[in-house]
Structure formats: C-alpha cells, structure tokens
Length: 339
Image 1 (cartoon, rainbow, N blue to C red):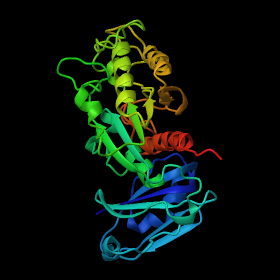
Image 2: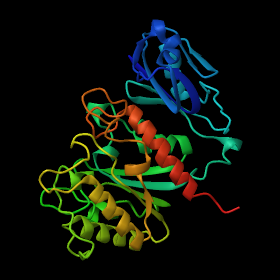
Image 3: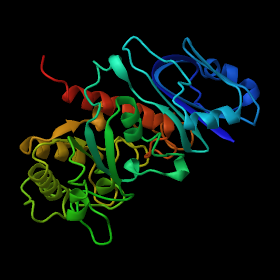
Image 4: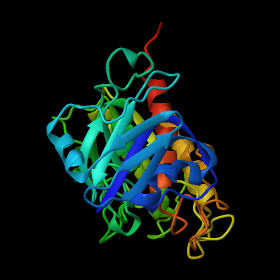
C-alpha cells in the first residue's frame, strides 16, 4: 500500500537534496528530517503503510498522526481535518492519496484568502506531454502535475487539454495546437477567466518544425512563426474576456548545450525569441519558463542525476512542484485587484 502526502503552503526545512521517496512505516517519523536542508513551499513524501501501522509525519512544526489504514479510508467520508497547517501567509492545503487515488483534500479555505486572487477562477491549460496526466512513466497524476497543484493550492477550477507530442504548428500526422478543435476545445461552457498555453518544445525538438520568419502570414500555420500568429489571433478573438498566457518551453538537457536541433540547425532560443516577438503584437502575457523558472541544462541533465527531470525534458514530481510554484505565483499576480 502506497501512501502519498502532499503539503502545500508550508516551508519545510529538509536536511539534504535527496528527493522524497517511499519510506517504510517504521522510519516514517524521521521522513522529512532525513531529506534535509532545502527550503521548499511544496513537499511530497510517499510512505509504505500496512494495515494497523502508525504514520507520523513532521513538516516544520506540523505534526500529524494516523493510526491505521482504516482511519485513513474513513477520512474519505468525513470532513475531519487530518492536518492543521498554516504558515505566515495564512494559507493551508493538504492532499492525501492511496495508490494514486485521491483520499482527502483540504483546500485553501476561509478567512486566510486575502493573498489568493485565483480562488474560484476558471483556468484552462492547453499543452503537450508536460501538461498530460496521467503520465505513468514519471509517476505524474492529475494531483501532482503542475496544473493540479495550482488547482489545489489556490482553489481554482481547471480544465486541462494536454496531448503528448503536439506542436504549435501543423504537420501531417501530428496533433497541433492550431488545429481548430484543439484551441476551441478549451470549452466555451467552461467560460475561462484565463487560458494558459504551454508548448513549443516539440516544434523545436521532436517534430522539426521550420522556424520561418517574422514576415510569415498566419494563414500558413506550418512554420512556427505563422502558427504562433494564427493561435494568438484565434485565442484573443474567441476568448475576448479572458486573460491569455503563453508559457515558453522549459530549457532541456537532451540536445546538448546550448540546445540545438541538428536537423533544422535552429537553437531552442530561436523559438523562444519567436514567441516573445509575436506575443508582443497580440498582447499575450508571457510566462517565461525558459528564462525565469530556474530549469536549465545543468539541473535538467538526464541519466538519473537531475532533481527535476528523469529524461532531461519532462519534469518529475518535484519538478512539477517547482513549476507550479513559479506559474501559480505569476497567474495569481495578474489577477490581483487594484487597491
């Protein structure tokens, strides 16, 4: 039996940079202290728990005791707070899962929401495999992926459409963001307050989409420049009352440094520059995941040594927590009401 506890909004002092992992119930009391001197605002740990075992966890000064598997299951039918968690910002959230199934979630609540500008907002995410859940090879679920963490932390409503391998531009046999059914599927009945597009890495990498030039017409949709123009125009036209965001591709470590596509000759930074340039013309809000999220070639390195990614491209659970912190803060800032 695999128990997964996620705590958001608590600064935990963890003793080393070892990632959270499965820990026998007999040693679970020391779980967080063993993980050591790293400050994070989102912590996830997994524990093996047999029926009748006692689970005691400590995060900062927060202590919780769970006496049996039967008690955990009973939480599914109750309003009991398993944890009482509150930090200096006054927010609290907890998620508990057993074998990947959501058992308990204590969302952001009550009088502690003055910092939270996203509560109750409808946010639509359009993306590729990094936005897809579940992703079994990385242990990613709808509860620990970046948009799921944002949903739980801020209490917003999320509609997610992630298609592995998809591109911004159109190419035969490949799902494209600019296919009308993709961007229109952000669901008019959902009525999004924000539409967040996260793509471009497959245009650069897996599908070798030509970069094109700034002069390309939006009607072509087969070069990166033309497809960006078409997508941005379409989103602004369809969702006139929504804030439109574009998350630039994360830096990756599977194409050398600096990242270059040997087939097209273009660098990943070329696609990043195209996004920035076209976004200005269409008043798209940029979330600069490429430059400002902290992910880079050196900490995304593949081969099992990266704290954030198993393959140099896709975030792991810790990587999604980091991504959620960055993206959530920016979204929250843009919905801040004028004083």
